[in-house]
Image 1 (tube, rainbow, N blue to C red):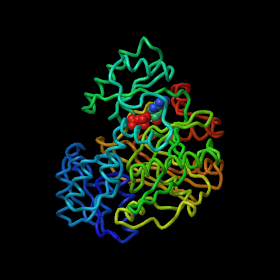
Image 2: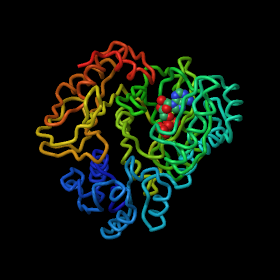
Image 3: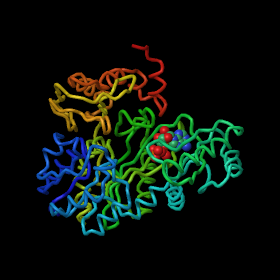
Length: 450
Ligand code: ADP
């Protein structure tokens, strides 16, 4: 097993990883920026090293500083968490070439999946369904027009190197195509240094359904069923569930098998997620793979009883998975609400001092957070401050339990999106499970101004 792990991250995920390491008897090293001296991860780790100023580019993305911290503390592995360097194949390579264990997939798998054109090509070979559109990169507006006519409007032009919901343009009819095409190209060049774009059909009312996979270095890949992540705003997930109430057993079996085939096609090792869009008729299409642990991993952990961070560490150390697909059973329903330090309806960030923090508790409530009373939320990073996860036998009970948990939560001193969750959980369409990826934004438009 691993001896000491450096966690190249901050916030709740750094705390989550430190806790998992401690449970396994593994030593922990936190790295922190000057703005995070009093952060929870800095305090909880066995050792903590400052790696630079507040700006992420100079601290949490500062590869030489992180590698020096690993060397100074005699670590044997690096866990990147999510965000920051988690999907940076060059970083993974540096980690491995410097003799450390990388808690993640191979740089090769990361590269294939990190480029959307190469990922789609690999998925096609693996027999995973793709959104109709171009087979690869599209070179000219004329070629884009031909593909759009074949797929049918509306279409979406996407940057191959895109991510985080950036580098996409929706086109409703042919006269708008050429301008959108060149705009997407130049924006992609500016944002990602790569102007490769492709075209696919824009699905109008899909749901976002993703499959959690876990692979080891002995060729085994299993899935931990699907998650429903359609409740989004600006391509940012707000609430996630497992399982999806929209997915029936037959569809579940198909989409999970597609997820496993996708992971196997890149010899995937570790925890990963295959994202799909699903139409009303339950046809589904691959959109991308995230080659890291995801924010919403706890809902999958809860319905399966498998600790994903523990297994990331175990497979990184070379252990084979201790369970077969048949042994992974699904039990009950889990929901996660992302609590952000921001205005619940205007979404303006609200960093600052948390005068008082009270986390909900009781039966089947889990809170993953790095908050404490008196902590000052720095303005430099993501606004997510806590994840509340509940579990129950049925979705209905799980929603009620979440309503109870959200009511118990107290974050005083900063503004949080607690009220958004309260209203959302009480919404009849949400409760009936009738929604798609546009639901939250459309509902927000109808809410009376306050
Ligand atoms: P990113 O890597 O930036 O997250 P994705 O390819 O995962 O990009 O797409 C992000 C979101 O954009 C999806 O969750 C979905 O809401 C929307 N989207 C992407 N492709 C399509 C499509 N073909 N049709 C409809 N919506 C899409």
